[in-house]
Image (tube, rainbow, N blue to C red; front, side):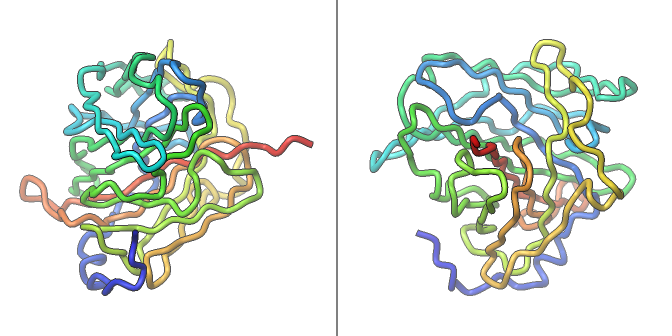
Length: 278
């Protein structure tokens, strides 16, 4: 269990690791989060700006890619998925930018059991040349198979992560989502958090965005929303539209340097929102 009254991390650590480059999001997208048993998953792994459909950034070979399967009180099982990673050429929505991304074809046999499947990606640090800073977004996406809940609310012991306080795969439009930002297992007070909506469909065949934007932002600040966690590292966001939402806590990880440059080690989680039938 998470002790929300744990001694806070020093605020100076947050300032030292604060991310200078906004709106970057590490995506792991594989369609609906609620699935029937024995379905394969075609996952697209892209480092991008999801609301605007780009620009996307070249990815290096991920450092880790695995899933944790949990059902009821059973001990979670970790499965390495690195063997399924294949580099692809990803085309942005405006067709003027092609970058290296990844695709992971996960067999049905690996997702035949009921329960929760948390996919974890630790990408290679990306050099944001304009800021001369590396970015590494440790990312989680949770799927549910067969309607049997698992340990969706348990931390995985990552260097930094967002632990959900509600099921990431069961959210009605108009509701809220709550989570806790952790670094080295401790809550991060007043963490800077960005929230962004996936505004276009992704095409697993053509390896790019497809269709028009679902919504047009009235002003640029609406493309990427910013909030702060409270003193216990807890945050709440509204969920005004069905689809996928990315939540990223910036510069909260314990690692602050890579190859003699500043590193912003971020925590990202993806949340699916569903319209309530009338």
